[in-house]
Length: 308
Image 1 (tube, rainbow, N blue to C red):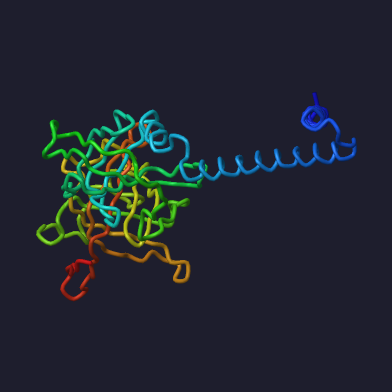
Image 2 (tube, rainbow, N blue to C red):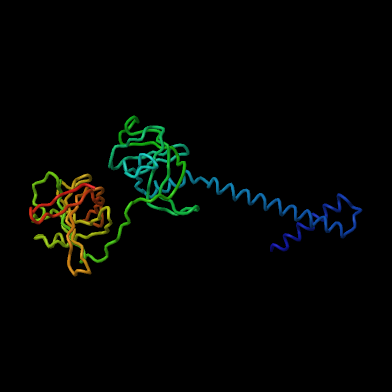
């Protein structure tokens, strides 16, 4: 049955109902009354539909638990910040259990001390995902059980999300390095302020296109991305020193090709390893933050380091 037949059937039904209520009315008035009742019915249905749509926008169906369940099912790593205004990641978790009232989170990596108190609001940041309200990459929730006062030292319990949003993750925009021939890296896993290594002459612990003596091993390393705040590297596991770990201090010598001068220009930085994750088979992906800069003093033959 097509829509027009449905409308005609409803119109006949309403007309018949009007004739039963007032049998003495002329046919024309009966038709007008039936049309009026039909229009009133359509208006009521339209109002109900608009109210239902408005209600769905305010309270998306099960969104408060559906998105955490999606994160759990996909095994997405969630960064926990001490507050919605904090920028530093305290711990990294995976969601292990979702219910209508709470979220269990298993801590897989500690980058800082979780300073948030039970009952306070924390921010949970994850890889961006699309929803009916647009792209989001974070939610806020109440910390109901801490790793310090809870039953397990590697577990957090949160309330269901109180709000979703899209927050900027980085102060500096990262630029992907497509052509490795225009950048070289020398890196030492050492504290530049206390180490006695002569960095300007020493063989680096990790290199990218840096003409190390261990050429075949380091030539496969690559710079993934770079910004004013740090650099991302892909390094073969077999050339990573044992002292290389999250939080380790670094001395970094970058050589960036200057198209204007047609030569490589050296830059010195102090840094810290912020993350180490498995990359493609046999490689580790490192996230490195610049913490200071260095100036090579030609007369003294040494580097003067300055913290940011």
